[in-house]
Image (cartoon, rainbow, N blue to C red; front, top):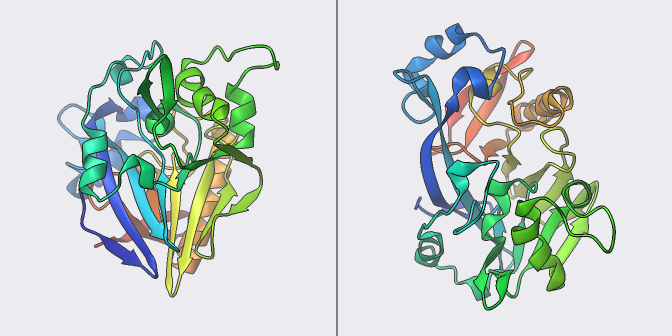
Length: 292
């Protein structure tokens, strides 16, 4: 659990579900020369890369925002007890995430809004919990904001069908059935400080959440970045991106605005400080400082 931060009038906390070694660097971001990793080893290790094994290191975490009297969760991690045949490292987890959330002062019934930046397994898992007869919404009073493009892509193809995607079946469909889903496209304003914006490429509906309060600016970029190396080499998308070329174009656009407007960049999976200020470095970008 990180300390409470105030960005303008918005309180920000981070609740970590898990931290672990992830894919080898060459597999996660194909095309990035090994020399780039080695040249930046002094700050990539140990939070983002293990030079000995060559594996990247990542966190799965939820950002808790309190804004205009409401409690907002940004992404909900993997969840417990899931069947994940395509991602066995996420299968059958048994973490104390809800206890960690409680330690941050958040009870499930207190949550007003859940933001799923996209609908991959490690961003929607705690949307639901095991209940009598199956999966039920974990946050019974929340509105769940989901990108319409992802909902259409991962969901059932017809009104009388069920999605073949187990992630959708256990972490999205129960929210739909409870009437708690709000689908959005293009942009969606949550309140005076927070706005969702489409940022496609990683998935068809991938999005970012912009925070603007007082003089503070931040952008929660979801999986636009899996590693800080993609700040240095923004043209290289991860192996997990549905449309690598579109993802790269979106990344350059979002990072460019962040550099020009001094927005803190807050990726979903960065360990350590978790947020960075970036600057332009020719056609690429660099980390100018990590958030305190």
